[in-house]
Image 1 (spheres, rainbow, N blue to C red):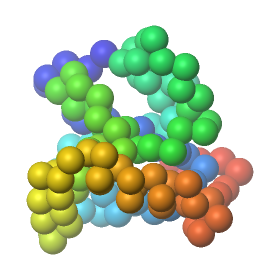
Image 2: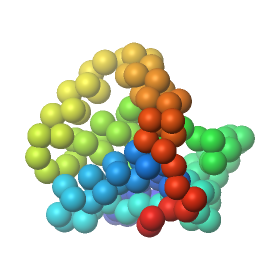
Image 3: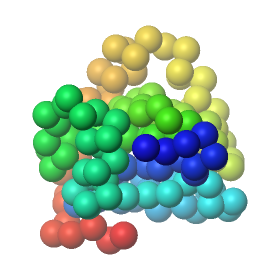
Image 4: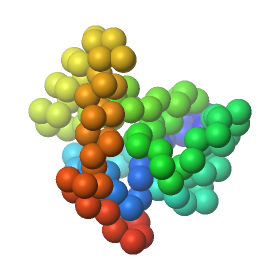
Length: 129
């Protein structure tokens, strides 16, 4: 489990090209290096996910969500992506305004892209990280 003093951790699909590019986008706009990263398929990613969702049977290989663990709280899907964007340098921080929308609306769009991400952006055999 992370503590309030622990840097935020982003868990992502390590074989998804869209997810990997998104992580590279965050790294480029996070000059203070606040975020830490782990793929959902990695040992640490699975351990963190099970620590925060011990009763969950989520298959990390099929999980179509980015996950942000910050201040001891797990955020997923659009909530995670928008909370990350809010902390970045540049205009992407303006995306956080979408947090005012109910999650079921935000996540509908997020899921539409997530279900098609491999087809549209491809996937790799292993995580670049």
